[in-house]
Length: 146
Image (cartoon, rainbow, N blue to C red; front, side, top):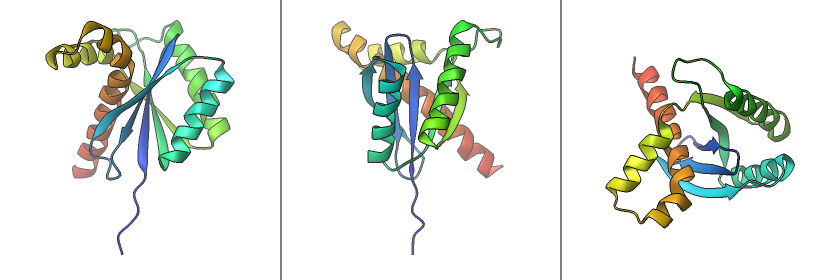
């Protein structure tokens, strides 16, 4: 009998929106899922919890926006507090993952895909979440292979 694998949810936490991405059941690839317009922190966590339950999520990877020199700034501190609350309220494993340049990479991917400007702004945060999640999944796969 095959072992059941659960998906990993990726988040790009911003001041106005939260981008969501999801892995395939084997944890090999990440796909953009949706963008949540921020409400209250409690509402945001409820929506993420509903998404995690609906998608059989075992873990959440949250992009940590470190400064380019690796230091922790105000937004990274907000993300850490958010991740701690997610961990407490959803009782799921929550991993913080360096997201430096993920938004720029997401924008390049959307430009390369020739997305219209209006469409790019709608999906950028979900694509950024997928970039972060894919980096995490790739690192996990490499660590298993070594």
